[in-house]
Amino acid sequence: MPTWHRDGRTPQHYLTGPPAEFSLKRYLWGNVPALDVLNLTSNEGEDCRERNFDLLFLASGDLRNVILTIPGLPQSYKGKCCVNINDKDFQVVARNVIMLLVAHRMEPDTAVPLIIHIWYSAFIPAVMLQILQSTILPMIWTFKYDGMWGGLVIYPETTIQDQFKALINFSDSVDKNPKSAAIVMPLYQSKTGMELILNSYDHTEPVIRPAALNEFLAIPGNISDTTAVTNMSDLAAAFASQNGTSVYFGTFTFTNDLRVMTTAHEFYKDTLADLKAKTTGDWQIYTLYQPLPHAYWKDSAARGGNVLGLERFDGQTLCCK
Image (cartoon, rainbow, N blue to C red; front, side, top):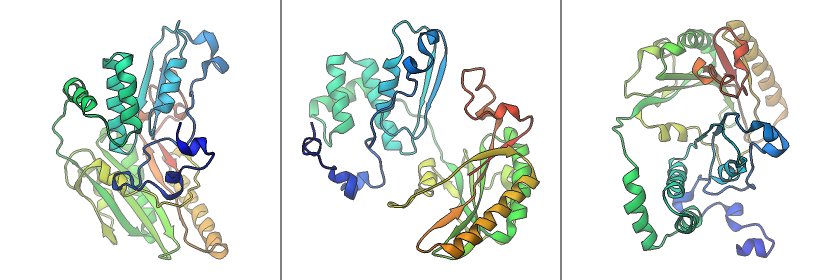
């Protein structure tokens, strides 16, 4: 039992953040109890024995929720349970993969102490390292990766209609260009006092300025441009929040319609004007417009999940945050 738990105090790493350079801005351990996301006893019950489940642990952090959920399936379960575990931090994902391989490959008496060390220890014994290198490392293969293209481009707010028109055309063709992505984000930060449009562009191959994004890239007057051949970790890091900040957001989905986006932007402008008049300190507000490809949802209902409910739309949809 940790001494902070025995003493009834808050652990120091929750108060001041992790001291090691490796741990800065990383969430190596969960700070809330594990959750059984299915909780079949209180939900589907025994009738689910042959039902298929697709579980997505997005921004999973460690494996606590997975470890509590999967053993919760009844021993009589005969369906298929597909689990997708992901996180923006590569080190956290890599650690989770190693622990899952250990659990799959080794006997419990060997696997349990090894997983505990990988999960919670700053160092592991030499004998355990040797086991990992001889047993787990050969199971991990690598593939050729030349990087990807992407980055952030900032425009003046006056280009918003050009941005919306480009987004509509891009969204209508998004299924034809599965390797490209674009997000349009009107943004205001109190410390700069500037109303801006921040666009995020990605292309999963190292192709500079891919044709699918030509209409966006042709909009004149950009203020800055960080696009380059890079990698996913660096692109994700560009959106990292500052420590100590609070984020409040809501989402809704709508059809790919210029009228809807224009009206939403008018609401954004009214809210911004109200905040400018009433708030103090360091704050920011943004609205994010993101296409939702059919691949996100086209098989969801048939496979037992329909959280987004996008099947009700006939055409292309977007998400607004």
